[in-house]
Length: 311
Ligand code: B12
Picture 1 (cartoon, rainbow, N blue to C red):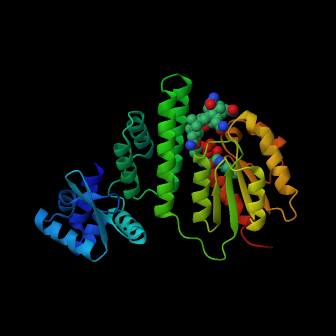
Picture 2: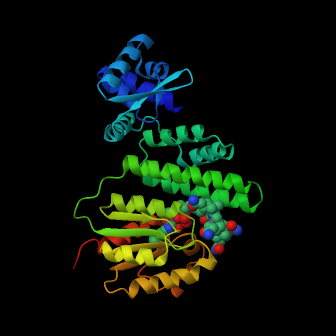
């Protein structure tokens, strides 16, 4: 089953007005008239007219790429809504094995084929798998596999960087499409790779989990100097700080970061430390004076609940 077939079959069996079908057909990507027509099951001429009217009504935007006239949903909120609605309609119809799909996605990425990878990822999401399952059973094993292949000299540095960059992009799009907006009075958390750590995939996953669990999360990358992180934590009255550490040589800066946060005038309620180093060398955790050193983002999310409300 491919993405287009799944969408076409879903729209075929859904009793929806044509305009609504167009929104759902454009939920995952921009498309040409012919592509939309094929998905919604109407003729190209009628679909073309409808698309032009929707552009006129500011519901869609259009652009030319060579000879192709491409359409997309104008309003980001409407695009999010369409994506969520499409997922609900597909239900479990497109059920797919998460691990196998990870291998397939990795294969595409190692061939530098972003489109094919993107299609497969949408397929998983449209099949109704929650992001959590995809992160744990598709993305994490896939990244571990890249690491193993790289260590064995079977993938190049360029391939590893390409895979990582695409996965990071996918995670930020998934966050944008699926994470709820935090409540105004949501408790603040900050998730950050320790200074010098470029491994951002795990922290992005934690960012998504905590946001879905009701936190207002400030996500920073590992290029943030420690003093700026500390200033932000103070200004935003951050209750929880999650620091991610990947390599042995990042251990001293991790210890220093925790100590500096603890020495603040109003320190955060809790400091968690996690990441690849903690997963592979849990014995090092004792050197870091964190409140918790969870091995997974899911564990961190569950432990964080006790700090969500003021005593
Ligand atoms: C992808 C990758 C990279 C990418 C990162 C790109 C990016 N945008 O993120 C690139 C290619 C840039 C890279 C660079 C390097 N890497 Co690298 N990398 C990896 C790899 C293959 C996968 C990491 C990953 O994304 N995993 C998937 C995520 C989901 O898992 P995770 O990060 O562990 O996160 C989970 C949990 O740990 C937890 N978590 C994560 N963060 C946090 C934070 C908190 C607070 C909590 C509670 C939980 C939590 O939640 C996640 C989900 O449950 C690992 C191999 C591996 N097995 O981990 C090596 C690995 C981490 N890298 C390693 C090394 C050595 C390096 C380099 C030094 C290589 C080099 N010689 O240049 C550089 C270091 C750069 C730097 N300054 O940090 C080593 C570290 C070994 C060590 N103990 O020192 C590893 C383990 C590979 C290996 N076996 O040697 N790397």
